[in-house]
Image (cartoon, rainbow over all chains, first blue to last red; front, side):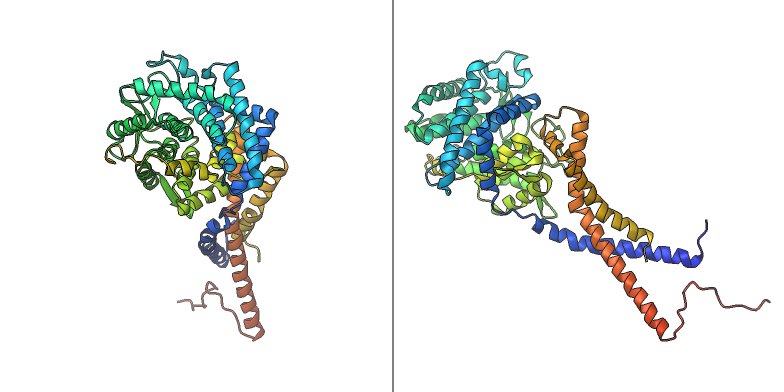
Length: 402
Length: 106
């Protein structure tokens, strides 16, 4: 079929008109889009209410734990840690909503009891990836990942008062962490055989700080030594960020990662706020970026050729290099360090990509799964507990910030 | 009045949100948490990606197509209206590509 010249001209005109219209429409819509996905302000409360209901629903909680373990057993414990921190913030004296405080405390108690039951019924390796069995641990034979996170959960609960029967278990887990870290030449303990993580070591340090705040004991020597050593041996020269994973001889296994560094900064603010802020600011400038008004975080600084996608990063978005794990934890960093503009950018992404859905008790981010929801819950319910302990921290700076 | 580009824009503007709604009504959104790990079957993961892709397309590309369709339709309507007015005044619309004037054979 051949078109008459007039028809051809009309068709060309129609296509040109459509292309111009699409360009104009894009120029109209894209600047509006981020403003249509601004956070409503209700998210922290709704997520908290959903978490309280979720912990109370034993069957659902266990089913989710089982599904998490199927993907990564660590996430089952980490979800409990992030949830416990958020619940403790809500139950902490001085929290905004007194009506929700009592139910948050009840949920935290239930979470702690479930954890104790799980720890009694199976060895700690239930929370570790299978390669924990591949070699023998070099140090005490224990995983600091498990000891540190269990100690943190128990210490936040004890900080709220009562439940003194938890003290022996908390002291045991914390004592194991302190012993392992103190005995090591680099003051780090292993999470896996000959494999230490800044994430886990700083989580243990945070648990120690909460313990000191509760008992008035003083472990600042250990924290100061760890931080001083880390500033010298564990800071990546190119980015100035703490690496993620290293051998017990400080040989770096994985450089800085978005899924680690924001949690590390959040933990370190309890001991060395200046260093913690420095790490947050560096991580933000190298990992967080803004696309059309939506904030995302990379898993690795640009130009890191050795990096590879794994269970921590989550599926990395092609071209953008954004990682759900890094973006979620960047939100934690932004709220912890009062960075409201970054928080708003990241929240917009959460709203558009993680698919918020109302539930009978609150809300959930559908695409984030139980682990992602726990991180968002903690990030958006960062509050008085952590800040008060941070403010009362011994003000030291172990070595200069590199 | 309805040409191909306008049809395409309308199909995207209406079709994508309609598909998204259908996917949601069919319960495919329940597979979305599989994106965060724990997918039991590749189909579950594919459905989850499709749901998220459809949602994001509904919120970004579909409205752009909708606005563009509105712009195209408006401009066509204006041109058509102008042509009617000109015709009503008795003027002759000469198409630019109309047949060239007769040239005597030489």
